[in-house]
Amino acid sequence: MNSGKRNSRTLQHSILLMAVAATALGQTLVFTLLPSLGRATGMAEMEVGLIISCSALVFALASPVWGTISESMGRKAVLVIGLTGYSLGTLLFALVFHAGLNGWITGGLLVGGLVISRMLQAAIMAATPAAAAAYTADITTPEQRTQGMGRIGAANNLGTVIGPVSGGILAAITLVFPLYAVSVVTGLMAIGTACFLPASPQIRAKAAPSLLQTLKKGLGAYADPRLRDLLMTGVMLFMSFALIQQTLGFLFQDHFQMSPQAAARTLGITMMAAAITSLSGQIIVVQWLRAPASLLIAMAVPAIGAGAVVLWMAEAQLVMSGAVLLIGLGLGFGMPAIMSLASLRVGHEEQGRVAGLASACPALGFILGPLVGTGLYTLDHRWPYLLVMVLLIPLSWLAWRLVRRSSRS
Image (cartoon, rainbow, N blue to C red; front, side):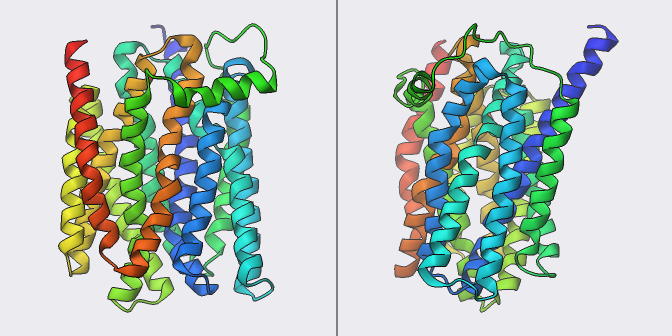
């Protein structure tokens, strides 16, 4: 490869990874702040869970559709649309919360405004992960696919590291200020992507399908038998994570009598540490040791299971945080493996659709996870973590099937 092509490939990877990191930064920051913002505006735990669940449902439906659109419109255009939508959607979400904190809107009107603004944001920002994963598939060979998707996962974890730290620091100004900062960062990233990202080398569809055809093809990915086991595995992985992430902030407030601001900082530090663990695992195991996707899946399940057991039994804050590190490590192994295996099961003409489906796995896990988790939390503070342990039974079976299928191929 000559130096010109090498420099172009480096630029492609760098901008892609920065776009993914910026989106992950915003997502993690929101998840970290929501329990504290909810308490500060007088919302119940399940109302906070409702915000995440509704937006996750919209994201899950939109993600494979945007992936399908990228096959004719191009990955770059869809990526810019997603980043722009994230920026504007976060701004709207922040304005609604700002009104709630000042008492201008309260009760059902506040909850409704937050749900609607977050759903509108999710409908557009779903374009970003799908286009980034499809772009990565375009510029990697099948042999490089797991490492390529691992880089996407590493960028996601980098954003996850920066998000809680920056959120905790900026929340000292006001609880809602970090949301305004995220809107600015993703807006600048949209401009940078539009100006500097080269077009993807994909083979585009000759003619753009109609809206009905696009919806049918995109949503039809959910019924594709080639991807069913991967979809179920990804959903259970992220549902387990959602059950923990969306209740831990409340647990810190109730079990350790923390203020909303202190709980936001503590949860932010915990999630940052989990992201660092996940990032380290991806760099060492995925990039350096080049572990196959089947091995990554086999390592992910016991890590999450061990974390859930420790979290269910723990009383000390440090031990709880250590349990979350194990869960972060499991996710760090699991998600690149699912994205890689999904990409390798289809041809180049389906990469966008499949990338959208794989990118929807986190959102699908967050549809039920926050609602079920916060609902169980109101009954008993440890029940969400007991449910994660129960989910490990079907998840272990699915992981075993994936490993066995990979060994046969």
